[in-house]
Length: 281
Image 1 (cartoon, rainbow, N blue to C red):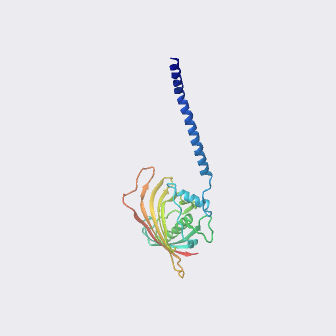
Image 2 (cartoon, rainbow, N blue to C red):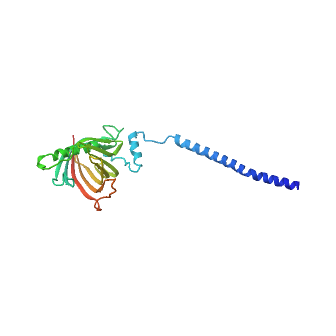
Image 3 (cartoon, one colour):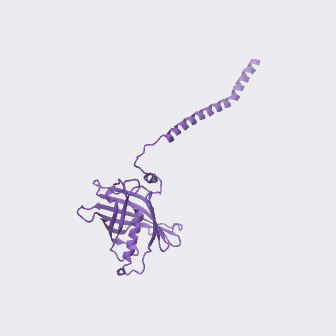
């Protein structure tokens, strides 16, 4: 009996210690695993990643932003010969704009500017982008001047631009403020661009969300798609670059607080067509 009780006691004692032994083994295993994970993480976070030495902080921001939904993609990169300032002659042949629809065709002359990507050489850059804020303000200012011509017999005119805001580190958003207290935000949400094999043609497509803010601060949202094609002219010609631009209206979404959808339910329609000529200044 004593032997039986001793055996039973040993058995019961081992059984009582089994959870503690298992707990110690779990702690040891978890500690070992955590140390291994920490070592691996330390290796990943401290090891230098290969980088392009020519890539600037702004370029890095643009590429990183391309992966963030709603922030936009990297800008359209034009061939190097676009760099600098140009005289643009735009012939608007079709427009549904309230100020233009009854007087087209109309010719507007204004300045355009293309700049190097930050960090690139200012004289021979690898990547050239549109100065979107400057170009939009320049066009709208010249358009207002053309509409002010008494021959157009307009009873009202669009407001003058007071200021604009655009940053090359976030090239997808242009903000315009007008003299009458209204404003506009143009945001590119998706784009694609193709450069011809000889570098003498460039085609692009951009989807844009436009927010028109009235004097009461209530925005009206609309969407559009802009298709553009550029072709380099012959060296002997004074016209260095020729382009065509077509804008498709994707509908007006109305007041975002009102819950309304696009008007009409119809597909995209042509909103504007223009022929553009660029001459080097």
